[in-house]
Length: 346
Ligand SMILES: Nc1nc2c(ncn2[C@@H]2O[C@H](COP(=O)(O)OP(=O)(O)OP(=O)(O)O)[C@@H](O)[C@H]2O)c(=O)[nH]1
Ligand SMILES: [Mg+2]
Image 1 (spheres, protein in one colour):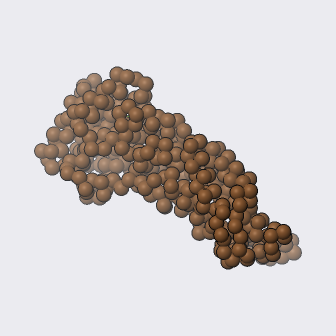
Image 2 (tube, rainbow, N blue to C red):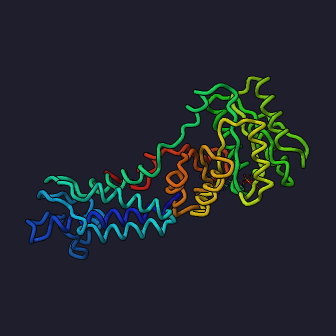
Image 3 (cartoon, rainbow, N blue to C red):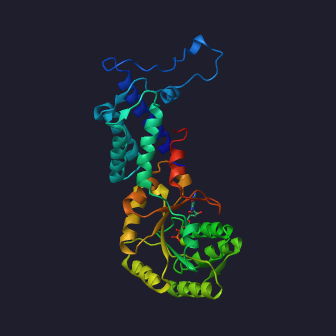
């Protein structure tokens, strides 16, 4: 998951570290810090794994006080900018990250003995966490609300809404909640059977009508069922749709009026990159979105959508879908996510 982004960020981290170290080592400005001795390669053939360039950058410490200037890190910041854009991070989000890293590094008085790498990692973490927001704890949310908590899932075709509902149903059951699923995709052939198969495997009740029925009626019945059976959570499936299809968006509006969801979740694929971010913004503008799920993160190397979506539409990322089994869902934890990207961090 996000391997390309991780590699690129590691390279940017090392580049920033080297730039800062170069200032400390510059003869015009003072004595050089002493990096570890370079590997002598063939001179020591018996030695296992000699330190790589990366290792060397990461053990550097400042041996004199310095203030990092804009000029010192300008090239490294340009490279970081390219790195983020190549990873499909949206331009305004890239700008925000660069500005934050710059603010963390430039003009601050750095002490003797400070680890250059820790300095850089801390700046990158601060900047990434700032755009990622605080995530969304579904369990806490449900616990804090009157039952049933009604969750409506929306999004474009084939992004993983139905699979996500099954995964979240399974996740919530394991947390001790009772769940009912509303089979609100009455449009696509096979959709009613698809969710029914998931529900049966998971031991979750599903409310369904015939193909072609009004989805609002199905979801109304699902909410009624939840009330009468004291079910904790309603998970409402809907047919995939593009925001440009006015009739289908009006149908979503009607569903919202009828079932009055507590939470509208927009589902899209991490692999769609910036397209997912643009579509999420459109859905948010037209029918509203309270939280986001990005599926197929297991197939996404670039990570741009995950980094960009919250900052762009101002809504929290709730889960990442990470595969095709019911357990392949991760509550989104910004701090853990950033640590994972910068593993071996400060
Ligand atoms: N690798 C991977 N595949 C996923 C993930 N989530 C869903 N899928 C797959 O994506 C495909 C589409 O999933 P669905 O759940 O049917 O998507 P949908 O959004 O409900 O589709 P429509 O109802 O047609 O709009 C299926 O083959 C799923 O197994 C994920 O996190 N990782
Ligand atoms: Mg579906």
